[in-house]
Each structure stands twice: as structure tokens, then as C-alpha cells.
Image 1 (cartoon, rainbow, N blue to C red):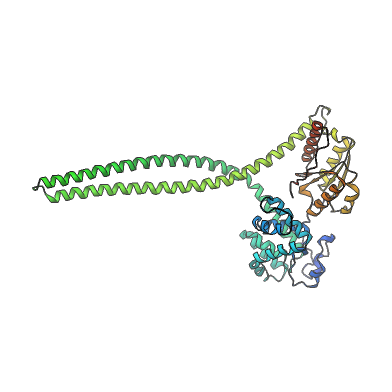
Image 2: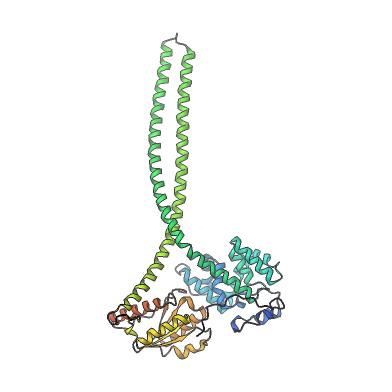
Length: 446
């Protein structure tokens, strides 16, 4: 089977500059074709409902903050504003955009109001080349959300322009993941530096306390000397007033020098404390990123361990490269989405274990209407969250709920994720003696 990516890559047809309709002549998917309203009125900006449903997730996740969605989405859904997770709020917002209606209009209004300035700035672009140039400038400056909404709804945003903007935004997520390793190293260094700064501050505070005590003692001592000299002057009228005045001036200068030294140490201590607070806040941010990275690493490690244990199971012959998945014997597994290369390997695993493996690509080439025929006869339904779109996932859940079929999400379309899930289900089934409960939580959409 030919490999088909989960989204179509950006491309520029040779005759794109001739007409708006000609720019879509090379596209064969019906979902990627422009609407009739767009072809009849090229000067009107596209609405959120006019865009392809595959773009709604990236637009809402990039252009609207979680706080804005938490205020808007509960007005059109049954979600609790206080207790719903950020993932549930985002998922509901994408569904509102796909379904259209009042919820989609409210999202459109919020986006237009927030990015009115960017929309006006992009209105100066009168061709696809000028529109792409403005988008590239926004990428360089880092001002992505306003530019992304403006370019996606621009009258001259043909499919190739939207694909290019979607591809650039998609690659930015990979760059963020690649930066995690540097952040971890920076976190370790900052934690060490933070500990050193805390020790330094404690030493400075002890020293300042000693200086304050010494200053108070010096003041008391100098005051006593001044009082003693004044008493001597009163008892000895013949003493020179000039010498007494010079001695008093000298004492005052010594006191002023000590005050100046104390002020310098106090300023240094305050600067060090402020720097320690800033470093501590940054260290907390990096610590949160480290926790997220460790959680992802634990998931990947569990998948690798499951694959190794399955390959090293007592039932496997020496040198066998097929994991032991005896719990799939006689069962029908329906796999929705994924990639052709890994799907072929998964088919071999399931059939080697005595099971039946049925693949549905989620609507890229196979019709989504085939769900109703394939799922009711399945024992278990599996779908990778990184290779399936929102619409297919929602349809799959509805059909499985209607026919009481177990469905389980996978973190990725890899063989390791599939083997880890099957091993976990087999272990749970052997411990309880019953079929494990259906998972109602999607790793990607909630």
C-alpha cells in the first residue's frame, strides 16, 4: 500500500497565479476543495466553518488561549467551567468548529475581535506571493497566532498557502520538543547555581548581622567617648576647644565610613536575593518541563519493556522475532488510522498469534461509512492518536458505543505501542478473568 501522510504537504501548482479556481485544480480530495461561496466571491474572508476540519485543531490551539476557551466553550456544551481539564475544553472547541452553528460563530467572533489588527495588516496582500511574504515575516518575528488566523482566512489564501502555513506551524512543535534536552541541562545547572546562591546569601546575611552588631557597638562606644570628652571639657576649661572639635569631627567621619560600608553590603544582599528569586522561578518552570519529559519517557520505556518481554516470553522459540500475543488468538482486531509500514508489521503480529487483523485508514482512502460494517464484528478496536483526525475519532467512538465494542487509543502508530497495549490487556484479563473495561480517555483528544 502506498504511504499516505496524515496531512497533505504544501505544494504550489504551476498555474496558481492565473486564477483562484486553477489553484485547486490539482487537488483530488473533496474535503480540500474550496467552497462555492469562496469561488463566487474571492474578496470575502473565509469563515471558520469554511475551512477544512483538519485545520480547526491547529487554529484553535494556536490562536485562542485556554482561559478564553474556558469562558466561551461551556456556553455551548455541558462541560463544567471549573472542573473540566484543558484538554476537554480544547476538544469541545474543535468539535464546535467542526459542527458549525452558534458555537462556531462565537469562536469566529472571538478570533476576529482579538486579531483585528493582524487581519487589517494582511489585507494589504493582493496576491498569494505577497500573502506568503507576510507570513514568513511573522515567522521570523515570532508573532505566530495573529498571522496564522489572518493568513488562514485571507481571500487569497489558496490551499497551497494554507498547507504551507500549517506545515510551518507543525514543524515549530518539533523544534519545541528538540529543545527539551537543552532545557533539562539548563535546569540542572540552574539548580546547582541556585543552591550556591542560597549559600552565598546566607553567608552575606550572617556577615551583615555581624556588621550591624559591630556598628551598634561602635555607635555606643563613640557616643560614650563623645560624652566623656564633653564631660572632660566641662571639668577642664583650659582644654583647647579646637582639639575637642577636631576629635569629634574625626569620630563622625569614622561613623559615616561605617554607615557607607553597611549600605554597600545591604545593596549587594538585596541584589543577590532578587537574582535568587528570579532563578528560582525559572528553575520551577524548567522543573515542570522536566516532569512532563520524564512522564513521556516513562511511557516510552513501558512500551519498550513490553516489547522486550513479549519477544523474550517463554513461549517464543530461540531467535524468534515475533512477540508472544497469545491473548489475541481467535480475536478480530480492527485498527483505524496508522501508517502503512507499521500496519503491515502489526498485521503479521496479530495473524501470527492466531487473530484476525482488519485495517481502516480513517477515511484517507477507505470510506468512513465502512465503520458501521467493520466495527460491530470486532472484539477490540485500536486507533493511534497521532495518525487519526478528529472527525474519524468521533465517528469511531459513536459506532463503538452503539455496538458495545471495546476501543483503546494508542500513543503512537508504532509497533511498540501496540504490543504494550495488547500485553497490558492480556495481563489484566488473566488477573480479573474478564474483559477489561473500555477506555474512555483519548491520549490526544480526551
